[in-house]
Image 1 (cartoon, rainbow, N blue to C red):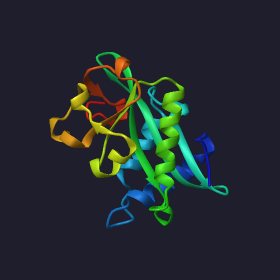
Image 2: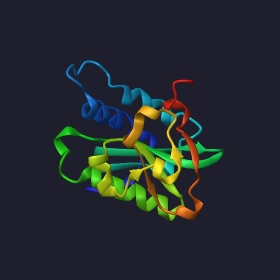
Image 3: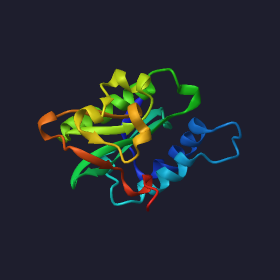
Length: 171
């Protein structure tokens, strides 16, 4: 397996694996994560440094993206979606992608990354309740699912977090 930054030519494969990873009962219905990714790739908050693919030979088998959001006017990354092709799930691909995006965030001196996800899954990557760090979700119902991984607590902004525009219902 190889890990590298996503490039434009990867996008069709990224959409296909995201569709497969998030497909519900009816595989003919396109998961909302595919449209979200299309919009994230085209928004001004997209930063190619934080879009990473995993490959098995030349096939894209996993992808993770973080885009810029903001807290009280200060930039902070928001992670998601993370997708792994179904036949590669439970084999460490997602963990490797998470480690790679964390390494990149630390290298770029990012203060933290927020996400909305399953606490049982993301705790193992160092994520904890964002509200305990003073980062408030725009939707109170997110509760414990709104989490943050802190890299530099002194520089971590406090206040309400707003995801990149494609995530927002007010776009």
